[in-house]
Length: 478
Image (cartoon, rainbow, N blue to C red):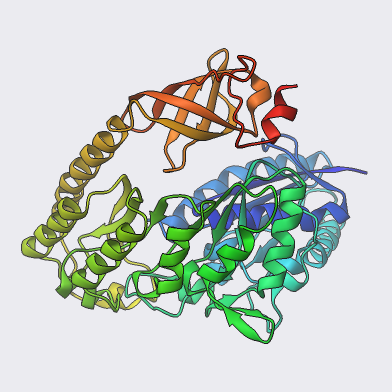
């Protein structure tokens, strides 16, 4: 009998990918994914530990779900609750202590074991229900936050449950950099790269199911060093191999570290047309003193040199980045260096945050914390500059014609929404049949967070959106 599964995903694209693979793993137990949490049989919170107060947000959500679980138990309809991801990895014991109604806690390295974990959680939940006469929701749950020796990717189902024109593909996990502010090495473990043929095989299956754009994922994705034919491939070599897959129109990757941008990867940006001219390259600060305190292992000048080499290879490259303001010890002069770097480089978009301590990280233990009001003022100043750069970049797109991958329909009648090569959201009017295809769009205006445009009507029969570069268009419009 089919059971309903709802997964709430927090945080990064890696978690989105993980949630999709959890769904794949649970198909064998009869669980079907649904878009809302109403009247479901199982809820999984796939958590992220990067953002501020991440743990408390999870407990707040658990409090709301607990009421539903208790009501369902009284009716004899059990609701299974699971907490997954990085908060589960870091705070597993605390979750069990504060939320004993949770049935299953598992970390990001163990979800290939999910079917057996769920079966065990279902068994224990049934025993509690029977022992309490239908009223019990508390008791010993199932916890698995180990770092297994085996790779989870070797045990996941080959088939992906859902397919779309744009898909994520995890190629690397973990990080060996140990930035002072970051919990990733502790929650995701050491760097691990999937074998190249395993990645290529999953990519081929995705393309065969209708995917035309792949985003390669990793906590430190350009540190990829996957086994291949008795040797190792870096990310640049892997991208070239992926580009040979017939039907794969676009390749992206995230997130990168400046120290791992090598000549092979730069050459791929120059030579591989499927590799989109957009790169998320976090720098975090423009101050060398703060970069040392962050243990970033590069200085501002090294970051600038990497950007210069990339732009020489691909002059139209759009850059994105991450910034943290108020890292312990940051002075006004340090912050001014960050503003200077942003001004000098120029970003198409960026993400910026106030520093917040993460338990167990080196920066959390220092007595040089920056006042919250100072952090807030600095963040506002930085975001004003970044927002102005993003608006200017978008405005400069007006008048260009861009190939846009149509991802979905919009809220307005006839509205379509897609992504251009430079990762900008583009909205325009067109037939719903264009969803999943790449169409040429003339950009009419650039806005703060998106572009608006008009589908180009070509000379080929006057068919809106038809492009001779993409044979799939003919089938989509027919």
